[in-house]
Amino acid sequence: MATEPNKRICIVGGAGHVGLPLALVLADEGFTVDILDTNAEALKTIKAGRMPFIESGAEDLLKRLLPTGRLTATSDASAVDTADIVICVIGTPVDEYLTPQAHTFYRVIGEISPHFQDGQTLILRSTVYPGLSQRVHDLFHDRGINVHVTFCPERIAQGHSIRELRIIPQIISGFDDEGLRVVRELFSRVTSEIIEVKPQEAELAKLFCNSYRYIQFAVANQFYLLSREAGLDFERVHHAATYKNGRVDSLPRAGLAAGPCLLKDTMQLAAFSNNNFMLGHAAMLINEGQPQFLVNMLKRRVNLRDKSVGLLGMTFKADCDDTRDSLSFLRLVGRIQGDRQSMREHGIVRSERRETTIGRHRFALATQSGVGGHVQGRQIFSSLAAVAQGCRNLECRRRLARVQIVANQKKGGPRKGRGALDCPLQQGHGLGAATCREQ
Figure (cartoon, rainbow, N blue to C red):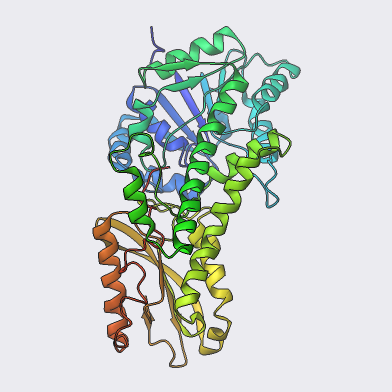
């Protein structure tokens, strides 16, 4: 028999990309769910019936659930006191040296631990460094609190969480039979398949999922570099290799492999292996080097020092509004600005972001404002030199190309015979293609 929906659940960090979709799905199943978070702005947005980020199907569900009283949002840690099940979605990031850092995780656990009661179940939900679940279990044991510690990792793609929570089998693990019983019955109400393993097996399984994706993207990006250096169209090579070929049709297209999970989790595995994870390190070098390669390609074709460059797609992947660890946002901007030092004397004073829709995709556009006659008001492009973190869909790429050409014509028109040359998407080279993919 599945866990009765009269159980009360508290989700620590519940206003974020992992916790909030889970809160909505569990409340939709009849559970009473308290969202506990320190982000006051996000809590205010949730209470108003709006999602603080893009998540397919979530806002309608939120508006439907709020009047039921089964979903509340608070910053008061005493919500842990009354919960039967506490779900923690605080993970372990890596620092600037790519070393796993658990201090935030331990701080949060330390802050809420006085609120725990004997018999409660704690579910660690976000990715953690292998062995961290055991340490949390030992922490409560040493403090004499009989909390059933479990690790049940999420494996959802941001933006598709509501749907994927119900269709992807749930991995569960725990340190005692009672904790396993509780999480087995809880997640049986959400999904039809449960996979039960040991805690460290579950920790590695989650890291393997993200690292495998990261390595897949690195393979595609390496093939892209090889094709471009040979003067060939990678999209044509990719199509020839994968079309109706089941052995390689899972090969992604090239693109910027980024976001808050893939690199981080690959580096956690590297640390876990005492830095003997050579494949992961190679993937990191390839993927992190992609922005520089794109800028180098542009520099071969145009002089960036006298150009304004438009970046289409500032988020870490398509169809989301999350710029965390985005290679466009963190790497491409810096690489391009490094070749445009002289632009500062022309009065560029700030950058702004706004959204637009091209083809069937939404993009965040980085625009620049300026004074001194160099930039008249605000403009997205001042030339054909543009980096487009776009989409693998051919029609969308064609429309992106047309947008660049129209923008240039408004400035005075392209020089004769240069339109196709300065617009890499027009030639079908697929610059920045393949961000239209799910991570």
